[in-house]
Image 1 (spheres, rainbow, N blue to C red):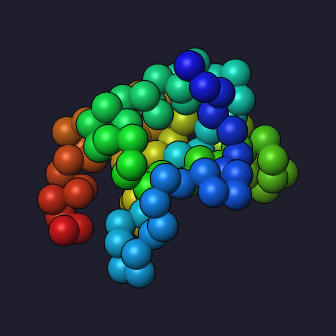
Image 2 (tube, rainbow, N blue to C red; image 1 turned 90 degrees about the horizontal axis):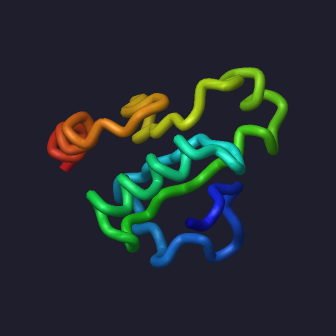
Length: 98
């Protein structure tokens, strides 16, 4: 399993289209829950679905905001999942935003 880390140049497998849904996964390296959430997300939406992965330890403000409370999956301004993946919550959010 690949470690979850800060986004790198070209990390997304396809370019984001303006107005397209954007998901952000706040995580940290060596976090098994973060890796599990990313795996579940990829399983539900496919590997090509654009997700920005942000390592909270790379920014003092994010580290202070999230502390040990990762992973957190956010869509726009909406927190979708914290600690554990909620496939039904994400599906409902995607249905609302499409």
